[in-house]
Image (cartoon, rainbow, N blue to C red; front, side):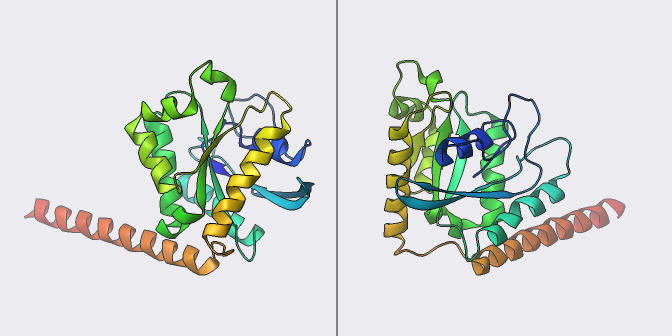
Length: 215
């Protein structure tokens, strides 16, 4: 599970696993500061969920958060079958868009086919369908398209086994489509190389700009 601070990732993990596996309470700051992994038998299947620190947590720098989130690849060895990109229902703000962009930068384009969007706070729909909600936002449509066109809505306030069963069915569908494969450490290393190359490109541009200004 990856996403912004305070959107309900830990509560979502608890809903999936059917118990208080991750620390979760209403707070402006993230309860999760390191990756943590919990397992349970759900719907007759062994399921492992990895909770990750929230992106854009003001207590930590960008590099530390990126490094901490990257740990999830090790926790999920040999690799995760699916990334749940967790989004809180509501306005898809610029910060949320930046969060999604950061996730895609960290894990690279190869992660797209192993991803799906999981909307939390499903009670906020209030008569609107999830399809209508997505269709109102071109940015959300783009995100869903990148994530296998797969999405699901969770209401962590109610005990509803159907929402969990349906989520697992969608995840199994992604796994089947990928031939049972998973996101690998090699894919992650390629994403890291791409980030480093982009950093070097920006640095070079700044150096050239400074040199030009000094003339």
